[in-house]
Length: 269
Image 1 (tube, rainbow, N blue to C red):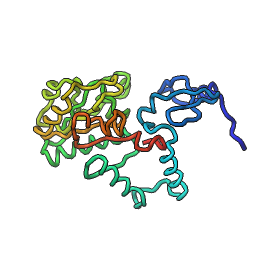
Image 2 (image 1 turned 180 degrees about the vertical axis):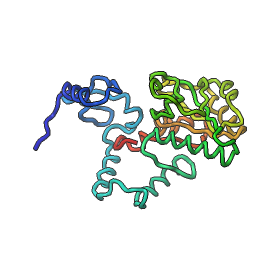
Image 3 (image 1 turned 135 degrees about the vertical axis):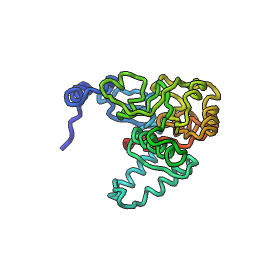
Image 4 (image 1 turned 90 degrees about the horizontal axis):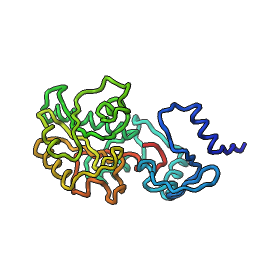
């Protein structure tokens, strides 16, 4: 039975009728895509300059990624529990580690999960390695940040729309002005275990820090034994013209947080 093709209006009305009203999209319905171009059900063509917040850095339907997806689907194995090994995970981890120059990688399901996991990692490192008193760890974050929408993450957002109605929030985060190295240095204490930052603040307004800012931050982190955690979910994997946005200043963080573009838009990551 052939599936009925819905009009743009019908698609918008259906979503409004049955979906939670937590998002307000532009009134464009995407039915088909190729490269940078998308078409709506009526055949109107648009250039997609958003690229799904970097999830589609490679464009819609990149032929190599599409073929890889088809090849894997044909094996019948599209999911395995971590209770088993599979033939792909080891290769993926090796590739990610070689790409980033780091020793280990931990795959999660979403970018927000990656951020939450980095927070756990930094806190445990602070207690077990740095020697911070239990339950006193602090992580420096920046005003104007966007790291996700979990309860912990919105708790250190400076956007009241993200926080409204979701408290009480998790303690242990110190927000400072982005781009002000003196404010960053002043926020450091004996309990500081990490700094969580975007090399370019995306939802904050595409804010590029002053030249030398990230490099000086790196120096202070090395001097004071603080982990640098770079959220490159929107800026990484070629989005800014370098593999990672940190590369523009020759900065090598202790951890990269990656998502979205890793799958080329073929699955939510």
